Image (tube, rainbow, N blue to C red):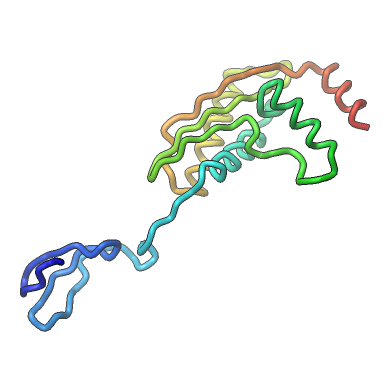
Length: 161
């Protein structure tokens, strides 16, 4: 238990510093607002979904995930249960208290400059995750697992009809 004699400082968890006075009233010495009282945790899956949606917004990204993940995803999309594409497919996140690191596996469209697409994906993912979560994104690793050729896109569309 902290000593509350006049003039002694102690930390109250989540409430900032206080200085105890002889009458028992403490005065706030922290610039924290009352909204910071408590802890917020963000699950890996939340960060993965935000990153996946941010990556898909970039022109030149055809899809996320490797061959097997996309195959299972396509089968899952044909079943009328659920919400379709998983926004976190092809994304892996490690989330700490204040930082996160992400690994993305993407498929690009044929003809795009892969280095430019990867740079744009990285920037968009960092921006989206940091804005929505307040976490610092320390790295975004991108693996380009496939290139979608124009004739493959046409075949896939005809198969889905």
